[in-house]
Length: 301
Image 1 (cartoon, rainbow, N blue to C red):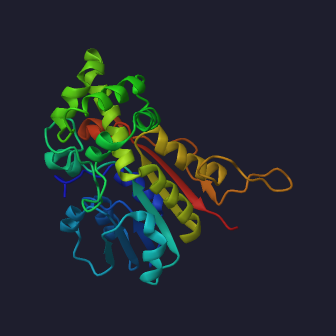
Image 2 (image 1 turned 60 degrees about the vertical axis):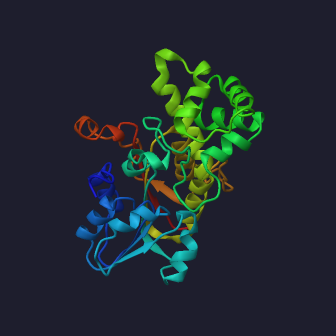
């Protein structure tokens, strides 16, 4: 498990869930199972449902009859909770980072540190990979996604180069893609630039923002009053959606107000400021450096 993925902000997440005896909890990003194992260790009775669309995660399922593994995207949380007769739950945990396993396996195509197929699918049976996007999207659509999801400053130039170069040779591998976009990759910040480009492609491939919005909206329906929502984000796009849901009751941030001007939100923030990894954790696990933890409690309607 530790080689698959080191759980981020582990103790803070468990504390944030405020585990209740006999409670029902959901880890929507099971991955290496680090958070789930800690929940099961502390949970008395109850049930834990773990979601992960990556088939590789099945190897990490704990031998515990309280645990239910769902090998599907967490956007289907309502459907599967109903299927298992667990329509209301006491807590939802989401660690939205890509697992170390996915980053470190070259064939998965998530990291520009290796060569391999330009893939990036968390669900390996999904039809659209990063290669399809860079080969088939229009110049306008490529420019849009690089700016929106990666905040790539020269997104238009990048899209133009991709569209021009792919006319001669289809883009299939990571190294081929990197070589192709080299003319617009700033040499002094190459690593940072490629990280933004690859992030944008990954988000588009896996429809991450739409899936997160679906989870936030579903959490309002499936959490019991007093239930906890515990979410770790890794970039501003994710964090904005989570923050909006907690503060405004809407993922897009357009709050509804009652007659007296009070914001109608189904959540109460437990931590007023985001919780960040300690310096010690960041040194021990560099991939935790950009993590932000928000905790909220479902309130009565």
